[in-house]
Length: 321
Image (cartoon, rainbow, N blue to C red):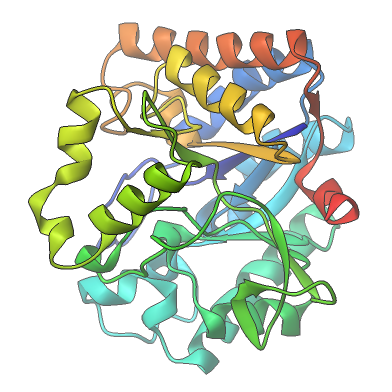
């Protein structure tokens, strides 16, 4: 098994898509988390939004790490602050997937070219901000030259905030064709590396019974009953993200152990750069929570190293699939 770490490297202003300008103070904290990654030989992928990629100070911090061979740079599109800003300022348009395909392309190209200009690289990996991914987005990525997407959040439905429903998707990476971005294709041009999300608990979600229950609780209108919450409280089935923002170290380790048993090739740990500074996200509100955030990451990295799970770059995944 291999470990990749993907970081949404973005502005401070969490969840606010209506500002005229954005601050980037959290980027100054990246060298601190990078030092932890260095200790474990982890080379994370920093997925940059347009404000980060266009900011001279942020570029200087990240470019130094890139040139030292400590990381790689990819892109992440927040449509509300990526030019051209032609769309109406409504909530649904905060999802890239809801914009016209030609406007998607223009934004993706502007972001891509800004990263190319300021880092002297051609980024090959991408994530849609707010997980706003679709067939059109994938086609545009392929058109620009991307090789890897990491926008899918398995077993998760974002339709309540104008996004896509990924409830049917597995956390297993796969190669796909732009003709059907949600279907595995051995001859596909791109690779999807989903966020690692799964279920742990007394009820094995990989078993026939666990799988049947999982499909049932995700089906409308049954999903409105919040049966997944009931199963969680009964310790029968707990949904866990491989993310220090929403999961503690013990549950993340249990999830990794389960995926090792299922012979997964790759796991993908994720978080936002803005969580490196307390008070910027709902995940890390205080100085003490910031300390625990770093400790959770260290605990997971310690476990993966002791378990023989090798860290690789996101761009290395296609050779495994």
